[in-house]
Image: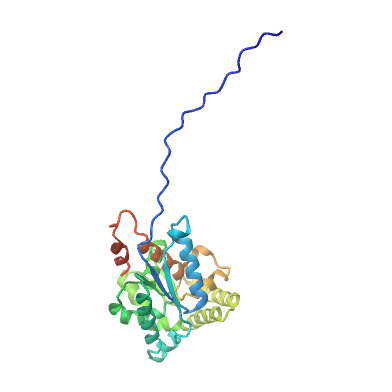
Length: 271
């Protein structure tokens, strides 16, 4: 019988180290009310971007959202150019309805509608995340030297972006009338489900602007980010008002740890 050989050397199993605690998933600070339908495709894209930006690991840590999608609101740009207030009653009632439904914070994924929202903002019972402020802050972060304004003819004529940019000390370049008309029509094409055509038209409007000055394009109509995505233009050369609004809503609903932790603090920051 052969004598047993030496036992094989066993590798030492390392002692288990301390188990790190899982990163806590933040809880949203309230309910978001979304007044959508202006237009429907832009509203859908806003909700997609919002879900993508939320720092949640599961369904339960996404924000509660109440939404009123009302595509019957009269055309905002047409009303502004004609000097009328036709969209105002529907916008006022829609925002008040969302507040009655329990919204703590309001968002409207339509730039031109904010001309009317500014007239009633002080009477609203809860704060509004302002798409113009969100877009300009995003533009200032990536291009302090300025940006091109791409918006509906009504938004441009109202001076909505130009006034706020001046208050921020931000240089906003405004295209000439012919280019503005092409940009506006690109948004109209997206509303009609012709996004690829809208993208081609937007590209034909933007390229001459870049020959004049290479600045990022602020897509300051919520259909225009969809057109831009279909345009073949470089993704890094635009500031999407939809993405800016979604990001600002997330910032308000999920206050950073350095901010006061009270529910009201995060929501008040959006006012």
